[in-house]
Length: 461
Picture 1: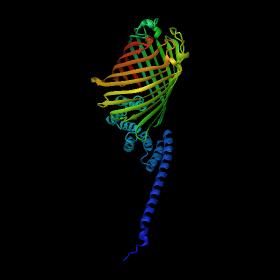
Picture 2: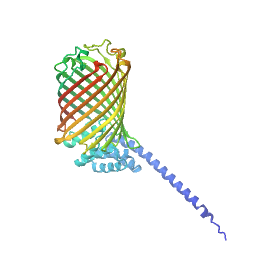
Picture 3: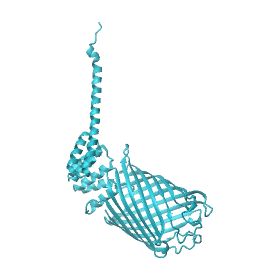
């Protein structure tokens, strides 16, 4: 006998599916509204935080967090606001929630280090700060180094200003860069000379946000060669820095920095060069907090040489004219890999990059290949021994050089070795040796140079 199915039973699967779709749509709609409201409250809370209205900012950001608990930007500003009120234990708890969501978020890790320090958890804070030591191109390096310094010595509060001053006594075997065969570059005076190097670097970061930083800076140095004052140099550089940093969806951190600067170079007290320059750096990191780190970079630079002929100009074509014009666009791209051991006490790095100097004057256009390698070994008494090597092969594109009527090809070897010891967290003594050998198909550009120096560096953070 055939059994008839009830109409209600026949419609039950359709009813169930319809209810399920309705519920899913409703939840998605509510979640989207929650996210939108969270972003609005985040913007309001950020403005309140910037106005130092920390209680109101915390209320807005707590509501934003309830609406969107996985929004790490909300968590970061909530921790900032709580920390500003002295509630560092609560700030730490929220930061750890954020790190559960995005373990590699460098801003959250830095915030964790600060909240731990504020609670007196010095060793934990130090470990987190050490894990944040990215490569020198990273704007976060300054912040984490500041923190490590503050863990060793009392500070007078966090400051966006830093200053570094260096004084060195040195011996230079070839101060004027005389050619290996001295008869090719006559009249340059005595090669070897004792001397001093004085250097000053400073930066003031006047704007800081999780993804943007802006700063003004000044750099200057003076080289005095007592046996050949014709090659005394003084350089003053005024510039700025604008940096953007964030994470890709893959979790890899990148940095893009624009640096405009202007330098004025004096030779023996006489104006030699004025050079406005614009530089764009971009870096991408793989595993920036691990023991193996890879850095990919692209650099674009424009240099304009406003040259003033030297009193020792030995070339028939004046500087800065026709084929000798050095104004240029420079492109540089490459990879560097870093390996760290024993909590960053020892390290190895190696890499390759390609650069192209697209100069207006054909005598200075070239394509270059660089191989780089470096070593760091921490000796007893925390003495840092470093060695950095660079090989740079340049093939000039201008065909025959217009002065020497030869095709120019250079191979340059640079080896910089040093020992450094921190006497105090702000004072470092160092011994360095530089070997620079350039081998060129045009003998006038072939030279060899050794510079040995002993110096003292003082830093203020």
